[in-house]
Amino acid sequence: MLNVNALSIIINEKSILSDISFEAKDGQIMAIIGPSGAGKTSLLRCLALLDTPTRGEMTFGGAPLSTMQAGKVGIVFQGFHLFPHLTVRDNLILAPLCHKKDIKSALYEKAHTLLTQFGLHDHGYSYPHSLSGGQKQRVAIARALMMDPPILMFDEPTSALDPELVNDVAAIIQSLRQPNRVILVVTHEIRLARQVADQILFLDNGCLLDNVRKDVFFDTTSEDNNTLSPRALTFLSNLT
Image 1 (cartoon, rainbow, N blue to C red):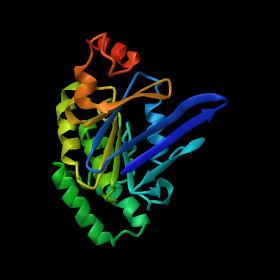
Image 2: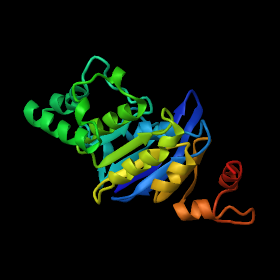
Image 3: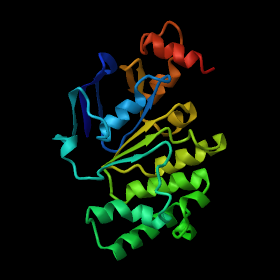
Image 4: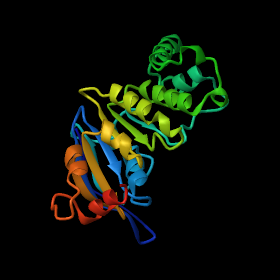
């Protein structure tokens, strides 16, 4: 289980995140949504240990997130961040090879298995520039999976893709659900959140305003409903 307690980021006296607290259970997919500038990506970067919070705690299975082995918090970046000078399969094996996770031949075999799983078995020797956006994303997901992460995160997984691919992205994310894995998805694409999430976190101005089941978030939109924050109700009404 992933636990976040009173997580805050303050930069130049400006609050980027303010006392964010939630838990994500093993096997759960959680969507993090909200308007631009709400702090969604900042939260994800903290969880990925790319940014250091001003205060607060992040634990997984009771242990500090910072003590987890390298690669156990996997993230698929919005821009994919593939190394352009490496082939697809060399992009996949780079991190586990650097961390001596296995010998090169075994890592190439694992990379081939993952590429086959994502319909990319013919692209192992291709370079990123020759791939479509959807193919680059699947390579980025496969790269994250090479380290067998119990925490897997996506930052705006549909933003660089054709809108018609939302259903494909949703199917891929759903296929990655495992009993011992937590998946967090930052997204502005409400269709994606509806399709994949069990739980919704709604952020605005660096504050966590709502932490509810998906059905509660999307089915209780009347003005007199007290389940959701007024800001979430406004956000949802602006989408229709």
